Length: 162
Image (cartoon, rainbow, N blue to C red; front, side, top):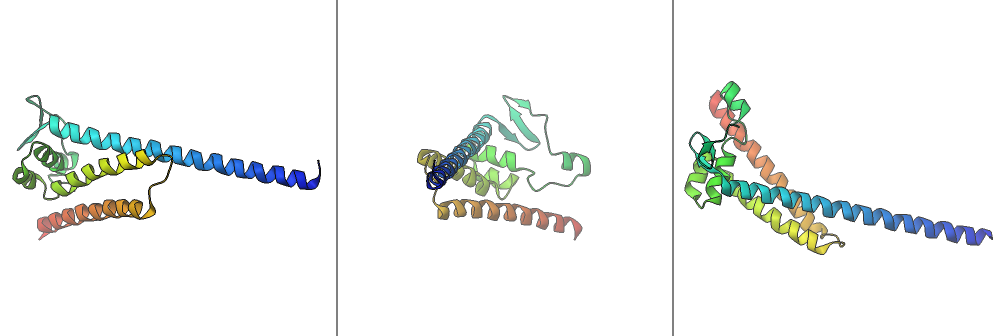
């Protein structure tokens, strides 16, 4: 083999390895989208199956034994206290009751529903990549919702202190 042939062979190998790397990344993205889709679907199905009560969640008439550990231990609500009951109320069609449990419940419910649509779209595009603008919009919405939940909790804590 001449030196030129060796260089061409190496450049083809590098291109082949690069293509394999991109295909691996795309496959991992598809798995990630499928996982988030599955997680959001489970949350919505659970919200529909459970019933919200003033003192917790009920599954087929039996009280669900898991509650907020922060509230049970210190009597202080966490940032997500009441969110499960709020999502359950929304899944059963009760918007007003949802707001009583957690004021941001409808926003979180809408975000979860939009995540399902986004993940279906992303999986349908596979092996192509979702546009950068849409991906950034999705990330921005997640960050904005997280900041809003945290700010809501800080206002609750401020009410306790003042």
